[in-house]
Length: 141
Image (cartoon, rainbow, N blue to C red; front, side, top):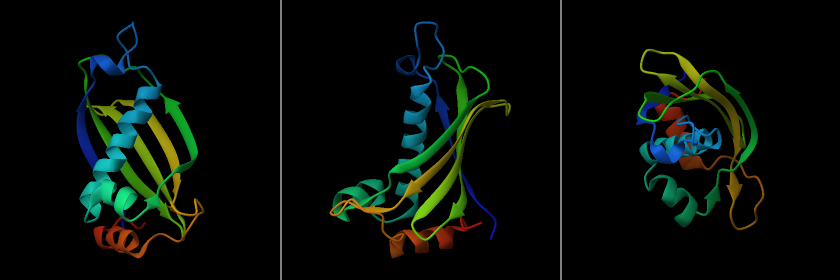
């Protein structure tokens, strides 16, 4: 199956910027985490809060690579994109991008998440409901 990209518009806010008026680099990770939560909300019943709070599964980051290509300024409208690039038995690899509305790459991340039990804090197989939702959405490359 071909990968599906989850995309959301975003306006760069004052709270995301440094005194120079450009995005303070750790704020990109906050934006991408918010995008991840929105994606899980759209993917499975109960969404991200249910996955973490009720089902007691975790989805921590175990690897992160970031490239900063161009600045984003307060008030810029950008597009945040999340694409599943690999599904393992216990992990999911994502490609995340922030682009201008015209397609200029501002920042990109390759991220590996591992599914865990919040009871044992150990890696577990991807829970059946999440795996089924990924497969149904076409996000398994």
